[in-house]
Image 1: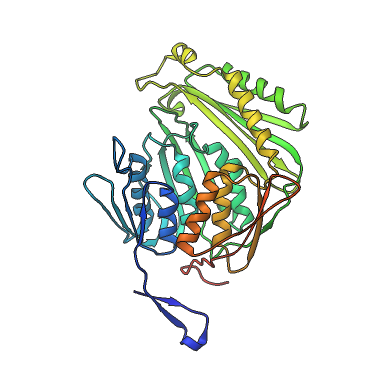
Image 2: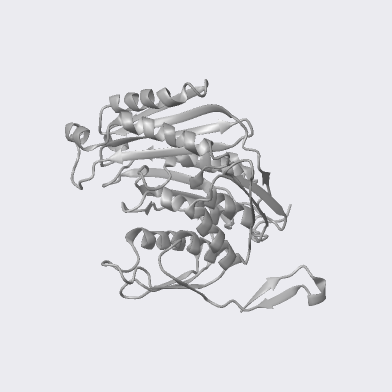
Length: 394
């Protein structure tokens, strides 16, 4: 039982609320469940976590995420049964602060898997967060650190987050299977977010990109740039793709390469697509550039594939790409109790799951209306009214 401040003076300023543990099943949406549990101060019980699989229970990256939440929060409580198929989580106070020891994200998922929930969580911390994360910076599963810098952070600016205090510094790159990457993340705190009306996707005015290579020839990057330009140059005149070749300690522990592209529109939208390829076998790969050339997907194919993926995302007429739909809905839901209205392309699976999680944890629903003139969708909601009570009202 907790005391929750209430604006209605007829109840003497306070409302007594009993929070029951929310019972959930399965491993679906683990990150968001943990995030929304903490933000809403709702204890959760998750059962049957991969109970029927050959290797049941929580995965290494999920346990690492729990440890990360324990690092930036105070007094949270985690209980996992012997098989890892049952989790009890009681959220604590979001502290943030400067973390003096690095968090190892492991190598089963990239750092991008951890960044989204960590950033949103620590916007509502007591102190600004600075933390070093180690692991994989680029892979084909999660948004890369390049996409976070070029696309994710500008989205947060739309909601009133001080952009000058948001920083993601890449100190070394790391690819599967052995990682070795390091980034330093800085996240400011806010008292509350700002509701948005964001329905104009605008027209593409420029495209920027970054290619990278680690422990292979820089020629791989030139091939990706040339093939990607072959797709996008006829469509947009202002195109710049930068190269980031790493060697030595800054190249991590595995050879590979990749590309991240972002289209900026006339209305200030950022639409992105990225991928990375790396050597599949888990062994010491230092000095094996020739072997890597035989194992990795041709760079020309990578450049063409990501350029086409970006064009496909732009064609959906959304204000964000499909990868960022979940984050967009989450930020709208956490806004003050005012109306936010946004436009996205075809709803992604992650976007739909986010809408369900917001309903379950915050009792918040979006009004969804398809655009009859395109494949895009309008969504509207009244914010939950999330406030950072540790910040003084200005």
